[in-house]
Length: 289
Image 1: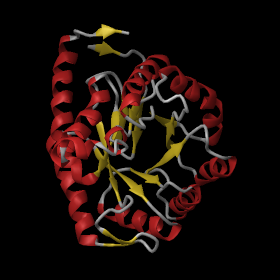
Image 2: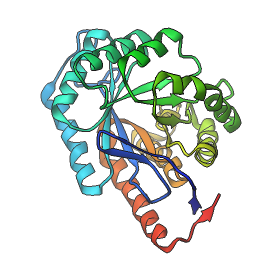
Image 3: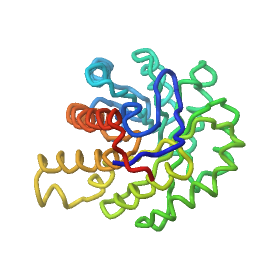
Image 4: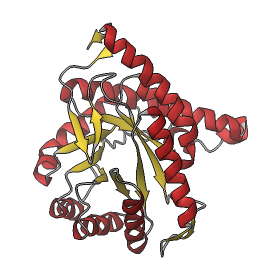
C-alpha cells in the first residue's frame, strides 16, 4: 500500500492526527446534538437529555479505549445559546478535543468567542473554514486564539479532485495569517459521485503538503434520498459504513462518520483496517508515492 513521505503530525489536546500509513490510529469523529437528534428537546434553547448524551459519549469512549482509535465529538449547535450549553457539557464529560460546528456562521463565531472566554480554545477544532468563509468569521477565529481548524475544500466541481487541491492551495496563505497552525483538511464529500474525487484529492494533498486529511463521508449516503426506499434501513447502515471507511483504506487520517450512534459499527471496522496497516508498516512493504 501507499507510503506518504514527509507527513505532518498535529497533536491537539493529546490526540494525534496524521502521519504515515500505520503510524497513528485513525481519528473517528462522531456528531452530537445534530439537527433532529433525538436527545435534543429544544434546539434553540439547547435543552437536551443529559443522561442520554453522556451515555452516547461514554459508548464512544469505551470503543476508543478498546481499539486505540481516538474518538472525538463534532458538537453541532443550531443557536448561539444552544452551542454554549453543549460546549460546557462536552468539556465536562470528556478531556479530548472536540469540534465546534454549525450551519450558521454567527453560531460558530459565537462559539469561537465563548471557548476563549472559558479557556477551551486549545481543545477546540473549528469546523470549518472554506473558500466561502467571510472575513467576519475569519477575524473571529483569529481573535479567539483557536489553533486548529478543518479546511473544507468546497468546490462547485464536485467530481474534480484537482479543484479540491486548488481550493486548499489558494487559501493556505490566508489560513497561516489566521493563526491556524494545526490544519486538518476535509476533502468534501457531498454525494456518492464525489467520494472518489474526495479520496483522490486526499492522496494528492497528503503527497503535496503532508496535511492530515479526512472527510464527512457519511454525507454520500445521507444525501441519497432514494437509497433507503431502494434497499431498506439496514442496507443504508452498511452503505454508510462503506463510505466511512473508503478513504481510510486509501490512507486518510480521520473521518467524520456521522451520528455518534454509529460508533458501534465504525470503530470495529476502522480498527481492522488500522491493525493490518500497522503490520504492513513493520514489514515496510509500501509503495512510495
